[in-house]
Length: 94
Image 1: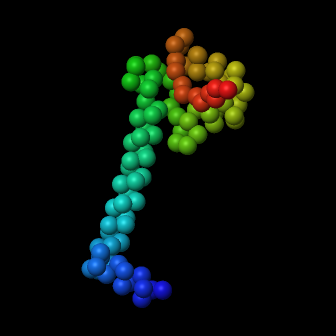
Image 2 (image 1 turned 30 degrees about the horizontal axis):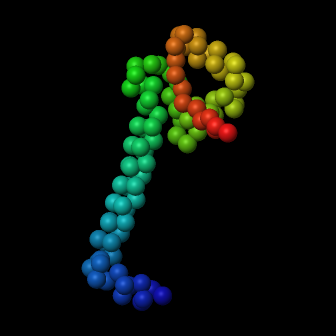
Image 3 (image 1 turned 135 degrees about the horizontal axis):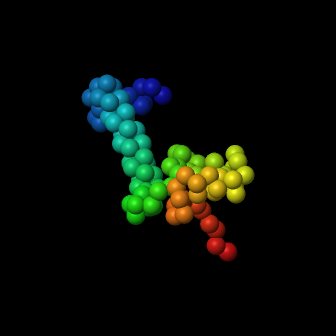
């Protein structure tokens, strides 16, 4: 199996070091792309100069409402950010 894989990759990567560097570069590029797209997706309120809680990666602001009672969390946000604040949420339309 190693011999077959080596013969397939030989024309593409002359040395395994360059192939490994290319693979690491590809992984870094994919992670950077997803991070930038995630950051842009959660900057809706910030772009409109409306304060609000910062989302946690993967969970957003949902985690804080699960760990605490939602009305208390919203009251904390109201006291911290004032009468006008924004946060992202997911709503499913039937």
